[in-house]
Image (cartoon, rainbow, N blue to C red; front, side):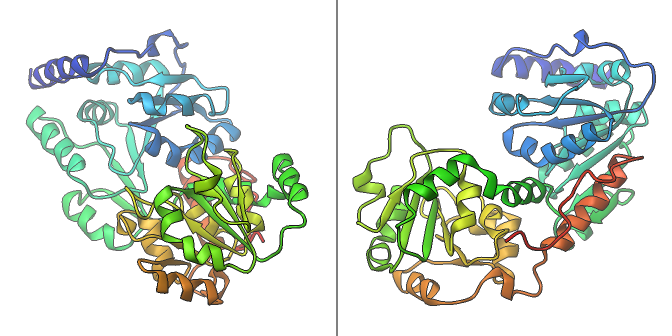
Length: 386
């Protein structure tokens, strides 16, 4: 009765926000309970899960992927095939039916994903929920409270956390849960792209076109106009070439804004930033003077000095970790930029930061989730790709 009341309210609220676009019923029913179901609310959560999804498919596991927000819809096209289901999530009152239909044995989500209907279905179906890059947020507590109101026990929970400090808080709220310190699966995708950067055709064309450009190379990735304004003097005085990649090509970036000095190269092309970082001697990650910086994982795999502006740096675990271990420098003044540009510190000088250890943790996580055969799923076992 309580669940019917909850699902009625949840369904009504969902319809106000968007129509139900799930077509999970069209998939072929499973004959055994051995399917992994990945669920992500939006693109950020799905990005974390993609390396795990790819590993599951490569290992031959039956796999379903669902999303809630339209922001993740374009990512569905990048997923490997075959998938038993790929599309929008079932309504809250249909999770149990969907799990039974596809023979789901485990649900994998990320960060602080917690849907009461999903959790209830997992509990009733004796299905474990694994949360990757888990963070203690109010959404987890609300799922717990609502299940209590429904008279339903919590499902079996397993949290993979990035920070050992997160374990105590999760265990205090979910004492029966398994908590394991691991690493962000996104490292796998970034490292794989970095290792194959030399074969990127468009990057080679850019390198050939500017083969005469003096070194050292400084790449400003995902640049905003605020970054260029703040770095103007440093760019003008830089002894080598500054490659500038705007955060967006709509509208077309102005050379006067993004390549204001003769030593600048405007890279008006998307989709090769990770590869471009491979030729850099140092990198500035844009966005730190606006709503927040862009990916710091991407340049960090190359063991080169990386810097950014100060806004929202503490919002992301990877930026906090990279900063603490000397990989990332945060610059709020022109003087700090000058010190960073003339310094020699790099990620390779930080003994406490190891890509190899991160890949080992990710490999162990995948081996636990994808039981029975992920040998060779990750070929990257070295700590450096440069």
